[in-house]
Image (tube, rainbow, N blue to C red):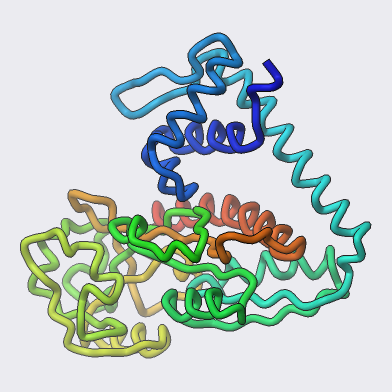
Length: 315
């Protein structure tokens, strides 16, 4: 049995169990769905029993799947610990880690992860560059960044540069921000169709270049009346009653008190995917690997906090 088990297979098992879908796991890992199916089939051959069963809301681990999943988590945790230990033995207490991130990731996600990294590796110099997802990908490809945190809309996750490897961190909900005097203020949620006549504030006059592209499948397009790239400017315009905008969950902790947040009900979830990006075709450095692990730990904590914030809107 042991010859048929692999670290890759165990990672796939963990991702399928976490997401309840072979397709979602494939997207998160950057694999094809057939590759995920093959990995699970190999594990099932080793286990001698089915590992997942299909239900109306996705796949769920069988008893055998749950047992193997428990062991898989232990193995993967131990492997990560071994890699950190070996990195320390190899003298990884020095050097520079070059990190890039989208602005909303710098609000909470990156500061927490970088603080934890600095506590572990005080001798490593950290260099952080904030910027858009396209600019971060260009930096990675050019070799001027070791790791980046980017955000993409679900519809665009499959169209990616093969020179870059993507690793799923979290699904970030998009919330509607309105001024306190706006007619929608005070509600907890609003239907997407109600927003057709709203005046929008975004980072680009082209809706599909911004979060507003989340609804490029709908039969109407948002009207962008003010273009503002900085969050302080966007929220200032919203607070003044000059329009509405979208705020990702990662940024909700920094929303000013004179702005209300509402959940959006739509045919497809209003959200974006936040991913770790590294260069393809090479081993990730020990420093980058350790930060990636810390980003996963931090993201798991933030998901719980964001869910609590979303349930608590309007604020």
